[in-house]
Length: 481
Image (cartoon, rainbow, N blue to C red; front, side, top):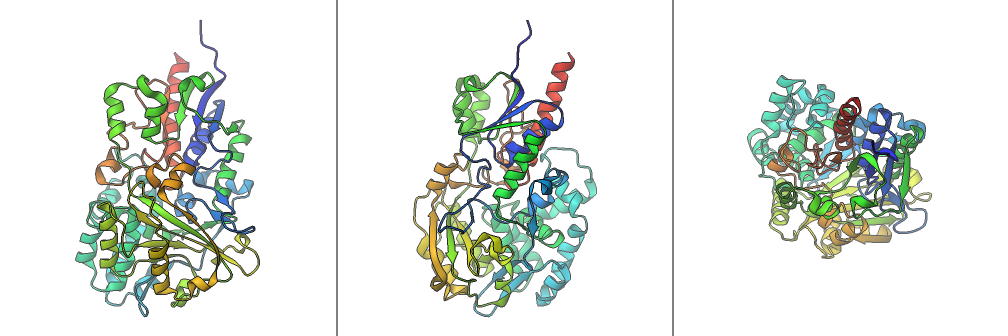
């Protein structure tokens, strides 16, 4: 007697990857249910009034080049559901000291021209990859173990990307502005700057800034999750919130289950159902450093020393290449950096809807040891004050979130890690295990689609897309028998 299924697929978790997986399954004609633990969808891709009424702060990331450039998300009619984008005049500013600054503009030439003797080296590095950004991003957002569609381009890019940013900087650049700019981009990896693979993050993020900008969703990151959910439901899918899944037995009968959770949670949910060898591999999966984050409601724009910072959607605060390298090294050794490298977003530079008239918002985060409960407000505000001495005079209210609190809000953020797992070279290849199909678990019909699978962290939905494709392939084989 054949089984009776309530749904073809159940997706556990309504973050961007879970929603992307659900959309892909629904596109292929499979009835799909999404279950979300929180009362709101989106995971960390949410927007809330964290400080004062009318000030709309992003719970997670605020700037989304990966979402705009994603091969899958960009193929969806998300604008139909209210998703719009705004572009700051300058994607990224990186003040170095009171007088020096590196500014990443949309134009490679304009950015290079401001780097003095390093202009030629900068153009030589970025012009080839910016001209081929779509094919390179498509390759980068695949599982690491795959047959490349553009083998020559990937071989050329890989020779640079697999190096450490420390090596690339020391061999190609001579002046501080270019060194600091690339170091700040690479620090998004959460890796020490001497680690192999750290250069890949600088190259990809720099490439996207030049090719499509570092855009901000109008109204906040919640607009991305809302548009994905509404599109999914328009395809016939169903979303239920406030459902905490602890075991497989809780789920309605379905042909497949796709989990937008980390390996640690998957072990907790599936328990003894997993083969011991696979379970041990998941238990050995490493999570990267956590973050400490502060959201600010401001009575005006941040009074920066450098005018370019006033026009930038993102500002990197860390000073010189060596200062950034030292800060990231300390965090990698389980210490809190005395002079932390900070990423500051000021969405209201481009989107005035996020705050009351003539008011502004900003958020800033920096890296801390995984699971840290330390209050880093003083060193953070001291670092901001280096480049905006009168900043604190503009603060109306603030909201602090430690790594411990981040995990409480969203269990996928293990120890405050926002990348789904450490970005060391091994875990970029074996994520969470070494496999041509890392989305499949040993349990038939059970899949993993979180950022703990390739291609890793970021709001791009590609982990969900690839996991859903694996499930669709297996479903079709099963149904055709």
